Length: 269
Image: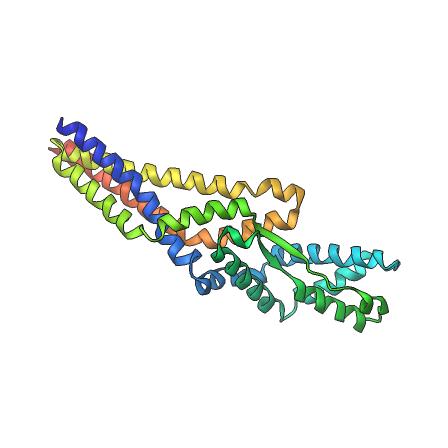
């Protein structure tokens, strides 16, 4: 009977641990606008992000140019856009686009899709074209090139996770610790229970790692259909989850070390 109770308590404690970890990560990196923007801001220097933003803006501007019946080749537009995205002003444009995207994310699914709006890049590219002697650029209408980060459906899932895990993260962490401690204490073979707890923690972190990879890879179909959308999602996701991966590895290592110590201690006795 004691063995069954101990096993149930240890398993429940190990199940709670990944949820607690994700809750603390979301509170640190996802919920607060300043931390979110600070985390993704360095991506403005990424050539992948710059190229994908340039691709999107170029496509929108070039299409509008064709509607104006101009014969200007697309590469002329691309050169003007590249000047903007590699310039000193792009990091601030990227920062503001992400601030607005996070505001929409914080408002929940009712705000609609979470997008990055690169209208300022378009406006600066228009000015660059005019400076290079392209009079048709002055006749361009207001253009709002956007790249989607999260659809309403995806945002609803994130919002549901956030609304539960963030407020209860301390309670879930405490529950995990109490369950693991209680499961070890009531066990007839405490070293065996400690071994199971360590392996369970390591296993829980492994499952969380797999889930992170799966979530990241859901962007890959979008890469083939809309390259910029998928690649920028992956870049932002990787930047945000960097600290989560660090803590995941720490907990995994703690669990593994605990299991190894319990195993060899048990063999000596």
